[in-house]
Picture 1 (cartoon, helix red, strand yellow):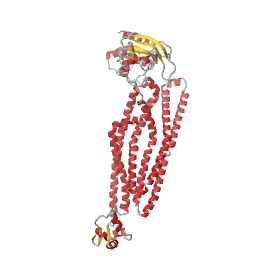
Picture 2 (cartoon, helix red, strand yellow):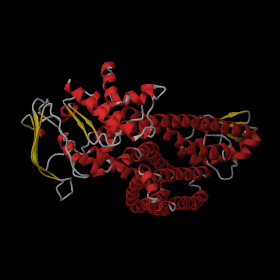
Picture 3 (cartoon, helix red, strand yellow):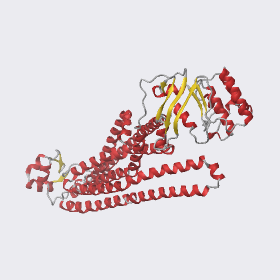
Picture 4 (cartoon, helix red, strand yellow):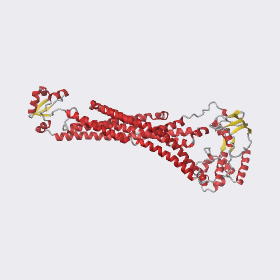
Length: 585
């Protein structure tokens, strides 16, 4: 999985910016409980007076305090028969001058100090700060969402591109090893799963720990003696997540495997729909699909049986922790070692810690599936492609010779070709004749290096075919396969197939392949669109277009593999006659 995410290094600058914004957002979110505590303890309990001392004293109260400790004279000055606090008191001095029978509210009321105005002013000031913090926090969320989308979608695009480029280079043996259905699933569904984990990673994996660690430090500052509550809650939550992960991850692996089977079943049903209907075999395929679908449903239900327990357990822990905090704080408030506002802030910080753990727990929904998908993707990316070094650039000058060739397919014990020997000279035209499934196409695959011979050797101009560069070899071969593959595009682009347009040559191959009669029936001629799967063409029309494509390519060898089977006799005879004239020239 790590090998897949190493590719994120290209986005390291954006990732660092995202992390910096998340740190700022966490700091802003941690300010709100602190402001709330001040609003309760100062704005309400102390009437908006931030100094933890008597701001105004009557003469009678001042004398009581003075008798207890004359140090009070250094901090208060007399104005209009009242003593006003002129210097801020240190905590040790404050302890010395506090007198139990001096009622602070009574002092302010007698002196005419407007405590209602002071309280409201302080609360409004803090409210404004909280609103500003919330607005900045929202901007941070928007910025992180934008940058995260840029990183995750860009990463997904490049990952799909790398997978596609790698799969294109696969040999037939490698494609058979993975199967087409799983290659499609890995390039689409698995990549989407990885994109989801990257999108969630910044918010869940990075932001959550930052917020949790900050909240822990805030709790230590509020009441170190009560920090054991955080330890217990965090430990229990982590144990729950580990247990759920242990059961869920193996099941997600099975889900991906069953998904591949369902994709294969759907592809087979759609591609073979004509045969299925002809043999009235719908019930068999329906039962097979239902069986696989039921297996997928059962596996998903078993996964959600574990995951549905997560949220109730987290909320249970959350509510129990609140009750425990209130119970312990009540004793501290009663003894005067803690304020009500501090208790509320403690609860909020505890909620932030649990919220962080809850956010992190959402990974349990995404990570197992993404982990399996990343490993499946990594299998494709790490599949070794045969690198050709110091190979000969292919050019065909003399002959092709198959000498004592034996071949069997991978994981097969039986040879499909045994002791094959023949020679094809340049400008010579030969036909390989045999019954159905006699491995005629296999010989072509060996000549095009789609497979390597098991025993024996193929010589081209007296040189072992393995000594030639594969790309240059295939450039010199133009092949018309049994199974016609036309792309969803115009007739013209299907014939050119990436080659440059040459009007004279195009007209020649259109005449030879009798595609000219096809386009004459179309209003848009060569610009006529071939539908997906060439469903708007007959079998003969598809073969004629494939023949035109084969002839248009400049090559040293032209191979036609059962390319006339769907063309009527008269047309095929005409095409063959014209092809002979074409190759004679």
